[in-house]
Image (cartoon, rainbow, N blue to C red; front, side, top):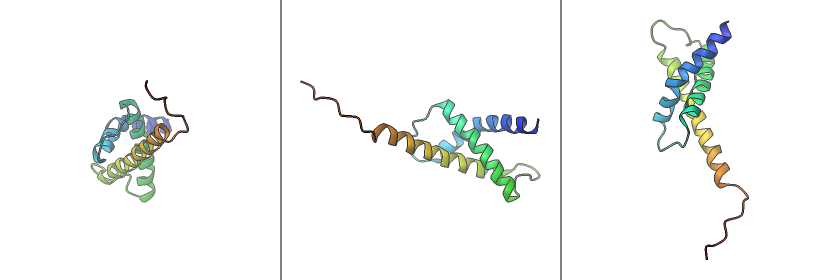
Length: 101
């Protein structure tokens, strides 16, 4: 049951952490709300693991360091997704449309 609660916590954290990650990034990210939450959940999960590994995952009170790590990981994931998505739409080998007559 411990992994199940971790996954549910990451999904709930993704609702907050995903939009926070987008807020700290400059410019506009062309990502849907659902994908933002999913990326935030992955960032919350991975960031939580990193915080636990660093020994700052469990503190008394609000875990500000853990939250900062989770938002940073989610922001990196949003940047990576944005780079991959923009490269996929503009860097293809498709032929340009014929000129209008």
